[in-house]
Image (tube, rainbow, N blue to C red; front, side, top):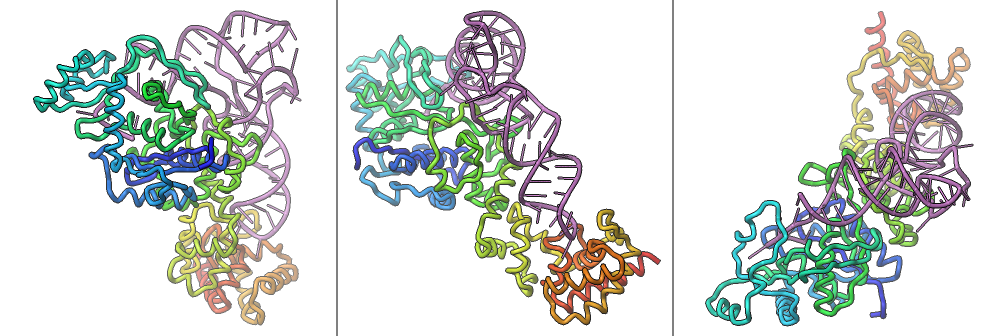
Length: 479
RNA sequence: GCCCCCAUCGUCUAGGGGACUAGGACGUGGCCCUUUCAAGGCCAAAACCGGGGUUCGAAUCCCCGUGGGGGCACCA
């Protein structure tokens, strides 16, 4: 390992899905590592046995892979700092907790859990067990009393730390409580494990949500007790909803995998999320992951929380869709095409669809008319801009039917030329000719591609069949 | 209740004392292009939370207020 190498980590607890805020934390940690040529580490924080969901390890792997965030070290990628799953590091925490006991930075507490639950307002007060003598402890231990290990916060003074985003922050030690470091079940709390692991794993930049801002002094006190160097801190602003409330899966807000299922491209989500709390400093907004790696920098991270906007995500998703090679888009679109559509030249359909697709999930609806013309009203033949109405439509469709029937070359260009010539010869503007045809072919107000593009894809027989149906509908509806 | 943090268009943001008649983007409205709808191009409306300072000069620095958020678990 290079000296002074940047090492960042993403340390999720296995909840079963990737929270959007967590994804951004992972992204920023990843980008920081990549930008400085360092290492990005995945560590699993499964110290809460009640919350642990076994299958969710796979979910973490999967979502990181989807997002393109490749880690250099992790549970399945040993880098010499393992194990990378906290439940497999229990002896390590025990050892360091005991060391801390010796160093005076912690003490054994024999109170029962309930003793500390008396006040809802969580008053800061010192635990009586702080005063236990070595003999007292020995007696209780011998008597088989179970205990936890608590951090011994200094009585007075204050603790100051420097954060890359928020600057210098000072908190009075009196505000800090003697938090539990090692639970009675032998598992460490996050508060202890993160410090031990970050140190042992040589993490240089601790990146996490700003909800940890106020407990960071406690961690510093721990580092100090051990005599360990304090890492660089990078606390990240929160991601909230447009109404200012918390973005939470529990309240129905989508996770990363939910967004993907909603038709958003992982790379678009990553791009969008990078911009929530960070800006490149210029006007660029479209970024691939590797472009982000090149331009990302910690000092351009914002302090204030950012509201998640589906509108903007949708827009940038459209940008990413349009940036795809046609073949790639086609491959993705195929999943959303109805079975019956497969009779058509779907690649041609994809070509028309790509520029019009904002979310993949919109696709099925948008192409449904290819399979069957929906029920529609003759009023649809009214179109101001095309100077068209049902009467004109009937005339045009009737005139155009035999003309198309005789057309030999059936492709967009020939169709367009023939129809345009027809319009010119009969005093119609092109749009007036096209409107009724497009309408008869689709039965919807908006289609991917115009009349001739649709006709080409549908083929001569189907086109004529639909025009015939349109004529009959108009005859019924306008007489 | 105590502590910490934050505050520029509706939203994401640029801005770090004079270049600000405050820039860009999404969204919204209009126009252009046009074979429908998009895409693309152009234009428009839209913001420095309030009050005090500091300064020749404040969106930018300081203080107070207000508003919002976060933390105070044998959760992370």
